[in-house]
Length: 311
View 1 (cartoon, rainbow, N blue to C red):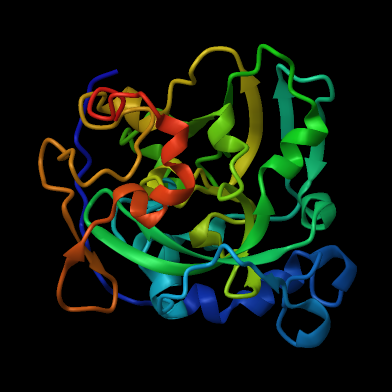
View 2 (cartoon, rainbow, N blue to C red; view 1 turned 90 degrees about the vertical axis):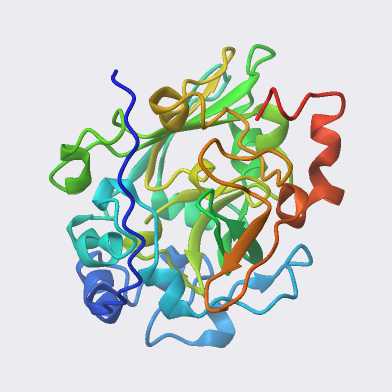
C-alpha cells in the first residue's frame, strides 16, 4: 500500500442535525420504550432514576467537555477527514441490528448481539481524559464496563497474547471508506494485559445516552492512556491472536504510528511536538501528561520497555 498522509481539515463547525434527530433514530432502531434492552442507559423520555449508569471511582474530577463539542468535533475517518464530517454524515450508519463476533484463540467463541452486550455487566459512567495525536483533548463521560468482562467469558487460550478489534466495512453506511485514506476495514489492537486493565472499557454510550453514530455507535473501545485512534469504533469483530495485529495507522504510516501509541510527551510525532495540548473549549494550551495522566495506574504495564522504540 502506498503510504499517504491524510489531509486533516480541523474545522470546528458544529451542526446538530444528527444529535437533534437522536430520538427518531432510536425509534427506528426499536429502542424507545425497550427499557430492558438498554441495560441502564438513559434514553429520551425514560425515567432517569431507573436507567442512569452508576458513577465510577476511576473517573477524573476535571470539568467535562460540553456535549455539543463531544458530538460534533470528531475523528472518524469512515465518514470523512474533517472534524465536522462525522456529525454531518454518520446518519447513514445503522446501529441496529448489530452483532459483534468474538473469536480466535479462545475456548468460547460467540456472536454477541449489541443488546446482549448492554446487559452483560453493570454499566458505569467513566469520565476519562482523551488525547488526540493532533494535539487536542477532551474530558468525556463514557458509559460502559471493563473489556475484561467480555474477555473472561470468551476464555482466551494460552496462545492469546493480543486482542484485535475490527470496524464495520460497508461503504454504503460509511462513505469515507470509498477514499483510500487507510486500508479498510479499520483494525486496532491491544496486548492482552492492556485489554484486561480496568481502565480499558467496552463503551456503549456517553453522557448517559447510547453512543451517537459519530462517536462510534453502537459499540467501541475506550483506552484513555493511549491516543484516541487506538479506541476502535463501530466494532464488529474482536479476535484473540498470538501475533501482534497489523493496525490501520501503523500499516499506513509506520514511521509515525506505532503499535502501542501510548501518550508520551517525551516522544515527538515526526511532524509536531506532543508536549502540549489544547483542551477543546479552552483558549490556551496545557502540558501533556505521561500516559495522559494515568501513569500511576498503567506505567507498570511497560516496565523495562524502551518507550521510544515501542512507541
